[in-house]
Every structure is written in C-alpha cells, then in structure tokens.
Length: 101
Image (cartoon, rainbow, N blue to C red; front, side, top):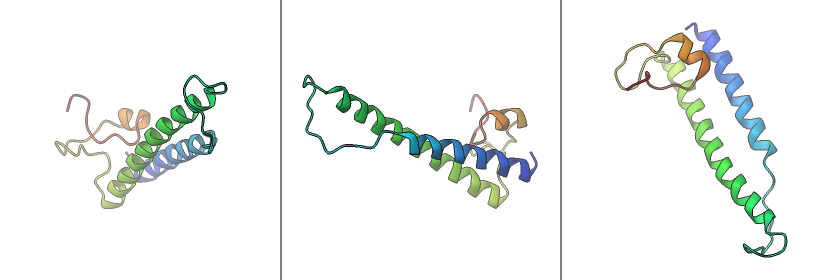
C-alpha cells in the first residue's frame, strides 16, 4: 500500500474514533445505585466507560500503526514480517497481523 493512502486511512480511522469518544455521554457525579429511580443513568455511564476504554484501545492501535508507517514497516505483519494484503488494510487500517496469525 502506498504510504499516502495509508496515512489517509489512518487519519480517517483516528477521526472516526475521536468523534465517537466526543459523543459519549459525560460522566455525572451522581450517587445512583442499581435499582434506584433513575439508575438507567448509572447503566449508561458504565456502558460509556466501557465503550471509552475500547475506543482508547482503538486509538492506541492507530498510534502504533502510525509509528509503523513512520518506521517503514506499515503493512507488514508484526508476527511474521510478511506483507498484509492491501484489501485487509483497506478494511482494517490498524491491522498488525495477517489473518490466521
């Protein structure tokens, strides 16, 4: 894959993740407990916290991919060193391995 295309894909992925992070419901300082009236807020906050962790992990994967791009190893499996197919990188720009590794 051409480096410019890789940069474009990674930038799009970064923007997607950052937008999702920005859309998460802000955490409140409430004292809701499960079963309390309004505890759906507690559920949403826990859901959002878990989602934020997942998105932070995805953002870290983008940063690792950007580092590989800068180092000239983007598109190579971190396990085998074999090229990752462009089709896979188009779908998953942060792919670190080939399917099955």
